[in-house]
Image 1 (cartoon, rainbow, N blue to C red):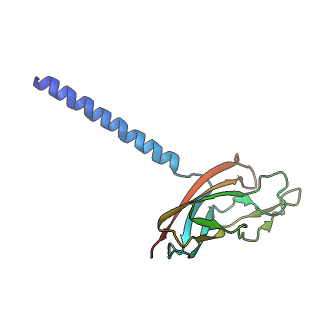
Image 2 (tube, one colour):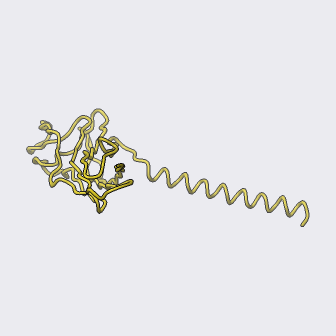
Image 3 (cartoon, rainbow, N blue to C red):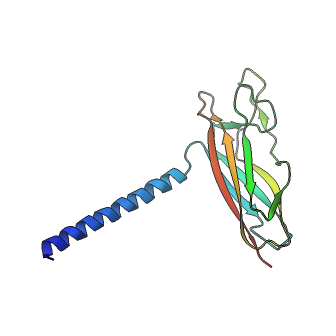
Length: 167
C-alpha cells in the first residue's frame, strides 16, 4: 500500500467517523426538548427497599407569558394536559394523578383553566417485595402551550424516570 492510498484511506475513515458523530449529535438534538414548556420526570426518593413506595414527579417548567391547559377542569376548545403511564412489571401505580390547582384564564371567551407557572404532577408508585435493581416508569405527556397571542400545535413528550430498588 502506498503512502497516498494510506492517506486517502485515513481521510475516508475520518470522514465516516465525522458523519457518525454528526448523526449522534442530530439524535441528541431530537431527544432534547425545545419551546416554552420543558418537561422532566423523577422519583422521590430515588432509591427504595423492596416493598417500598416512591412518588413519580412530572414537572412542567413554563416560560413566563405561556400556559398549558388543566388536567381535570374545563379548557374551552383547547387540549387538556394528559399523562399516559407505563411502569415496570414489579411496580404498581396509584389510580389517579395528584395535580396542582389550575387558575382560571380570564382572557378566554369560554370557561378555561390552565397552569401559568411551573407545575408538578405526581403519582405514588409501589414496588413489589421481589423487586430489585433499576425499574423504569415511562410517561407520555400530551399538552398544548399557548400565550395571549398564539397557540402551538399539541405535542406528545415521552419521559423516563428510573427508581432504584436496593435491599
